[in-house]
Structure formats: structure tokens, C-alpha cells
Image 1 (tube, one colour):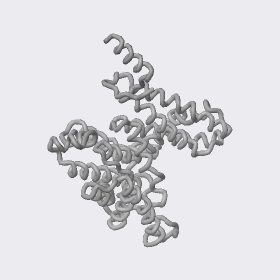
Image 2 (cartoon, rainbow, N blue to C red):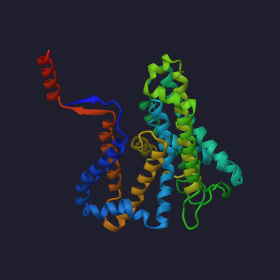
Image 3 (tube, rainbow, N blue to C red):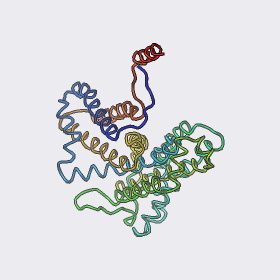
Image 4 (cartoon, rainbow, N blue to C red):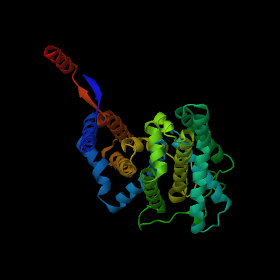
Length: 362
């Protein structure tokens, strides 16, 4: 058998492949769940269904999806232009550090001033953290996968140094910053839940990103550079400027996500400000096939699994990490089957037979 480039894929193919990936995920993770001492059916009920059965848990899913929307959009914007930003984790942390610094410097600002200032501070810090790898890529041709990835532990070490040094809480002496001022706390948008205004901000940015990527010249040139950089250069598109813009926009989105995480949920900077949101954003963008609406849906799905994994750990005594196993398996299966959107399988024997028949006819 050999793989051949597909001409035009039918519209039903992508949903069918996604469904196949889901079925494969269920089959492949049933064994580990059984080894963990639980029924696969009960586990998947907790992972996927239980978080959607009460209004509080639904809002918890939306809350958990908020940082994933930011980092998913960050990875998506970069990947569409052919810039593979793996540094969303470090950029997210940089944004969280920046908004904490600004909030501690101006604790008395009202929400009308603190929200835009905090978002700008986080976005600028994220973009600054991603600037050096972007310049190395466009000016020196150095692979951004390595440079952006290596900056992630640097950001984490900077965070730990601040929390164990000048920003250590003066009251509790815990390795966390002092709380932000009341005007810096994002308000809850639903009474009785923890869902905050940051979720609305994430959705607004998703809409803006969709418009920019699909309805503007910038988005179309970015896509052209990502799909065919040599052809784009021949058409006169500025490759370096396009890549630099995509890289900085991507890093700014991740940094804004870090700012929202501090202001909306924690209200202080802690070492757990990110639990791998930057890396999970890559999963979101990949599973969404670089589509903004799909990225929001995938972020919600992964948040659903995360919230469900906590419930399954309590009710079924499954390790909480089992949810990450399901997510990783879903990623691998999706990447594997979605290849067939662009390729199809052909039998080598059939091709030889066709050649023989053609030779006999001549």
C-alpha cells in the first residue's frame, strides 16, 4: 500500500475522521482505565457527561476552558503562518508576572482602568518574551521550536525566584505574591459560580482572531506564508514581516491569558499560575486543525475532561492523571487519522495490474 495525495476531500470526511479518532481513543484508553480499577463506561461518563449535568459544573468547565482558549489561539495564530511557537507556557507566565507587577505598583485603580491596563501589560510581556526567538528565526534562520521551548523553564525559574524573593507574601511568608487590589479582580459574570469576565474576554478575542485570519488581507497573507512560503515570496509577500507579526501576536495572546488567569481566578501570583496551559494550547490548536471556532470547542472539550477527571478521581478512585492520558491519546489518534484529509491509500498491486493491462492493450 502507498499513500497518494488526495484531490478534493468530500465535506463529510473530516467529521467522519474526528468520530473515528474518538472511537479509537475510547478503545485505547479502556485498558488503562480498567487497570486503574474502574469501569471504562463509568469513567467516560464522569469524564464527559457528569460535568454537564449541573449548572455549577458547566460553569466550572467554562472557567477551565478560559486559559486554554487564550493559549490555543496563541498556538493557532503562529502555526497558520508556519511559525511553530512552542513557548506559550513561558509567554503565559511572563504575562502573569507583568500584570502582578503593575497591580502591585498601582493597587488602587478601578476596574475600568485595571482591566485594559492588565491586558496590555500581559500582552506586551508575552510579546517581549517571544521577541528574541522570533528575531532569531526571521534574521538568522534559527529554528523557533528549540528557542521558544528553551525559554519556558527560564520563565518558570524567574517566577520561582520572584515568589521566593522580593514578592514573597509579607503576611503569610508563603511563596506567593500579596493579593491584588479590589479594583484588579475581574468580576464574576454568573452568581454562585467562579466564572469571571475573563471568559468573555477570551471569546471576544476569539471572534477578533477569526475575523483577522479569515476576512482580512493580513490573515490571508499569513496563511499563504504558512502553506507555501516560496510561492508567497514569489508573489511579493514580505515573509519576514509576516512571520514576525504572527510570532508577536501569538506571544501577546498567551501573555494576555496569563494576565487574565491572575486577575480572574487567583487574584495573586503563585507558582501554580499555569499547570501546562501553554503546552495544552498546542493540543487545542492541533485538534482544531487551526480553526478558531473549532479551537474554542476543543478547549471546552478538554476542560470538560479536566473537570470530569477530578470527579472521577473522587468517585472511582482513578488517578487524576488519567484525564491527561485520555487527552494525549485523543491528540495522537486525531493527528493520525486526520492525515487522510489530504492523502488516500492505494494498493500497490492494483497499480501494477493497471500498468500490465495498459501494456497489453498497447
